[in-house]
Length: 575
Image: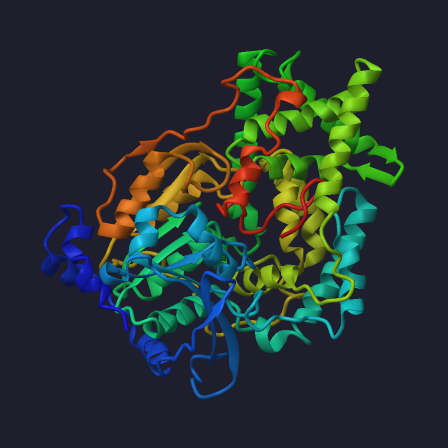
């Protein structure tokens, strides 16, 4: 069994000069009697580890569907571990989660050996568990068969609906989807709230032998981390959330229940802010450094959007016909802003579309067509799900719909989305349509033990929040507001591009590593500068470009490029 983590890193070190251990213990909140009864009534699971994926260990365990009935029905949870390289000096276990909802934490833990710092890999076992209903854990299946699932999801297989006909079709399918999860899938869907993931993590903390939790969560993983901090404020030693969703905005309140979720989270606003910064910087540096700089980039972007709103772009080659809609364009741009090379990647996509819609020469049009077709075929070159049951969208919805207060009627979504686009031009719809199946008279299954706040616990150990100014998926403003809710927390800010901050600069990565290893926080008000900034080197020809973009390299290394859900378009496959 592991040495007690709380002994390995004294609580006073984590305070970074904030006061004595005794004073902090008196001030800290404790886990409520109800939550203690729920999780502590579950016997500590014995994880029967076995070798998997050559460098990892895997295990499964069965945990209660309902923690009020610990001896009742169970669901299977999958766990993966990469053992610390220095077992003799191990601090304990670092639980990791990549976000989603629906992201696989077992796969993420496996890839962590390729992107976490050597100092962290030396001193921690890295563990990921797939939350209930997701990936290697027992899956949520809302439909009796793949055929029935495909019939519904095929009607929702657009980046987002545009125009009344698409909206009507999308809403009708979303209603079928939500009702299927509330009937066929209700036995598990009603137990997939983030509170249940936090409870599962506390039981698994005991199972790996840690007295206190260490956690690193990205994107939606920040929600799991903040649920844990508020539900179990005295049971962690270090908890970092990178790419933050404010849990009050995620869940909502009775006063905001009529809002669609992104009206609270404002991910669309964050994406719009990042886009405008890219276009303004592009304009400032000129054509030598930005391919989309000719004329007025902001105006030209809107021209592309207006053109595609009126009529999609149709491309043909020997393999078939490919249609690029306005929604594909917007979601393609959103997806391109997930990587640290957001400015360059997004502006190349803009330029290719411009040259197809308004070709200056036949050669430019041909080059643009080839580049666009390459992107489309790469995005669509994933295995089809015709013969196996893929529950990716069910996994996302099972958490989001069960966690949050959503508007009552799906029929209201077109009006809500028109309002969303005014709040966040281009991206309001891209984010807002994701939750239409969560309308409360459609998604009727509930988790009676879901946690809805408060979000202001006085934690025994500090929480480190990390927010990126230009994040297109988790608005930096949410990192600010969420950190203000927790009295014993610290905000680390970063000017990097893309989604989340770890690995984007030595400054941010070192600060996170130091906190995880020692409990020492960065100084108040610390801003890190992303190592990579757009448009700092002259534009080169496509033949001179590296074969792998920085975004692709980051993904290849396992770095977290995914949001609470990855945007879908013809250019970006759903994950």
